[in-house]
Image (cartoon, rainbow over all chains, first blue to last red):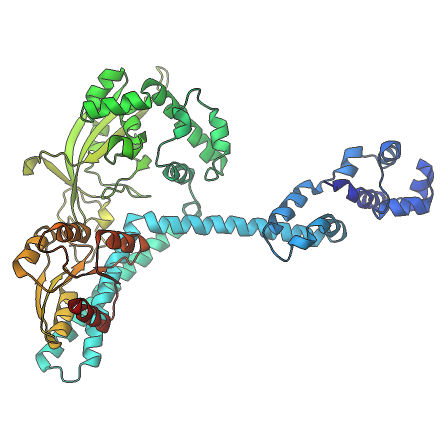
Length: 437
Length: 122
């Protein structure tokens, strides 16, 4: 790479910065002013003793003259030009651009960096729109109402000989639906407003970065199943999703624990045992000599095709804040905000070390049942001389084949806001679903 | 015209609107709002065309479509699927399971009418 071609420019800048005349510098290192002039305009290469002499005279390291501070700028500009048709032929002249127009070059590089940041934010927001159960439910509500309004309105507008009774009826429907739409839209706006009020919420949280990273590989980190296990830092370094350092720390903690679980419960043995013991976490824990929490994590980390069924997992800390979310279809934990207080996860949290097994029916347009196991245990970092740190986990499996009696099914939801169970004793705030289901 | 349509949808005002436009076109319209018993309704009513909403209480429209395609007498029944999501994911799934036609809400009345006519003609 011909980065040294800019050495002359740097000499010139440094000399002018020191208010030294060209002739004086030339004389002090024993060359003619015209030769120095050629060097300063990058038309003569310079190296060896002459470079050392000039650097000493200019009171800088020789490398500052040959490499300069432009290395990062150069990289940024190359990156900006990558794949850009018009810029490609001028790529070899990139140093000339930096040399002649350092300000414009910096502007270009900064703009490029800013665009990349904004693209990331947009991606993150799009992702949130797709995965947020509250948004998805409210949008469904608004769309349904709009559909009814559109159909009804077009009947009124287009049917010439519509009879009076029908006309009245459609007018009334139109009125009801418009009111419902107004309420739905207001709730949606209020929700979005609230969310954008806190700046931190708009940005991706470290936890979301880790989740995106895990989601991309189906929550199964194949590299950690191999022997020998590769360095966790190299895995993190290779993950484009883990860009912030808090996210990297979070991922490191997660992956270290994952590697430990994988060592205690090797993939093939565990998958076979899981099928044999009918996915019973208690028997699996006994078989592998590990605690229930570890079995939950391991089941959730198995590739779905190996187990033959989808497995979800949520964990929370002592405050009830969800710290890990692996959704399954029909059971998606809220992306932010609190979950349903009836979840067995929270039952377990209030009775540390007592395992909870229950069949849960999730409220929704199409209610679905799941078999859940939950346990609350001290977190690994617990010590005798510190506060006790608890961690609860809930494993989510498909409904068991033998249907339980009605009374044994726990009626729960995702989160109060989008839950249609109006008369729920645990309701914390009203639902935004105007009509229930 | 003059065939039978079974409309499986739970939004009362959408039901009323679709029933109105199809009836005026000469169709006999039966409606059903509960997902869990929707397939039984298909067997009972023996319609020429089914209009099926994806998001139903009790059971998803995709599951009902699977039953229809798996049933001996109903495998070839024309099914127009409606969804409020209009997402590529839903459309793909509907196509895989075998929906004859797919329409995203909000739709235009004439589109529904035309789709039903075309589906009935095969």
